[in-house]
Image (tube, rainbow, N blue to C red; front, side):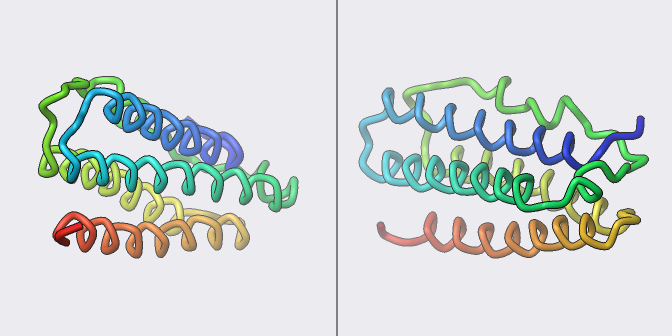
Length: 148
């Protein structure tokens, strides 16, 4: 089903907002310091990504935002955080796995959108998000493997 760039950006922005909310809820349940620190890191990351997407939407021209994609977002994957069980016993490995699953989905999405974008500026937006996703993934893995 065809969709516009602005709709894609809004859905991904909402995805990051929902993930940040899940990490916030988990912080209220968890007392293990290492998990708390990782939850804070992940919440901040998701909030930053939401802000970045909002900026893309504000700074992009109407032509870019209204450009069309013949691509259908997998709504189930965008809402996978709704299926995550909020559990006080969650550990670092579980959190990293959740973050990497969402990152894999977004990386694949950005890659596909970059490849099929007809509008040069829309292509640039998704290419930038793809590069940022790779950097953020490396930072997450470094953070999770550190002694923080």
